[in-house]
Image: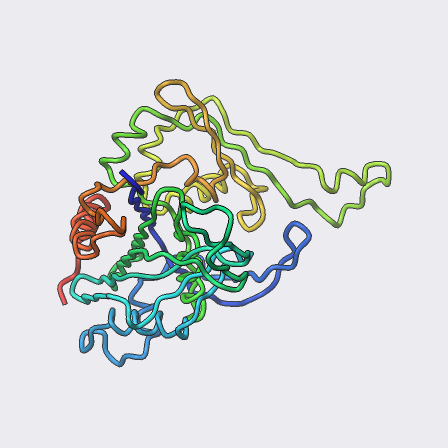
Length: 341
């Protein structure tokens, strides 16, 4: 059987950045972006590209070329220098402004550590060495949908069994949006058929908000200084929210944050952590933070007919056609109706 092809799908929204600042989070200074409250129509972002009129140019081609040029034919590492990726102009790619999509192949893999390379029949003598600043790269498929008449976009990224660069691709795409003045917010997208198969009888049974802020204008008695780092929680329990209903809401992360704000006035979404507790149809329990909810969501497994037998790599054209059909299903799922141009 070899490697299994997998696919992660994400909704994304963009908010216009008003100000760049820094915040101290968990003892570290981090760059933060103050954005407008509401998500923008993605056409607002498209208007930041080097085009005069959207209707007079294949703007998805402009977007793809601009994104690729940002890599400057080099690999970009993640924040901890364990993975790196690149999209280069020689890679197969496609674009269609009528369908608001771009797709293609990117390279990515491990970096930051030395490897010895051996022949499988000789574990004594290495044939070569991979230095810590090299990248052991595989090829991956991606597709991006950026409709100018909606505030919801879609990212699809393919991976393999136990190996992938999905998070890194999202990170690089987020950085690209930031350079154009917009901050991306992500939520995993699960097509209806996968919700029905994996999550149809599960439910959220509890939500916890772990607060990080305190009123610094109120000094503590020295005896209680350890309270400065104590965890304070708001707990919402004794309810059942069907997980499939929760996941089916577009931009469900932001929607949940807004609902928490409505009943918990102490909630600070920039620093507080939201944790969800899930029970499946067999009574098995799982939990994850809202930021890392992907850990309890299924990854889409692709049929072996979409990969080459020998190389285990995807059949790129077949995968493009397959994801095109899946994207059309998601558009119907979110009731997207394009405006005629």
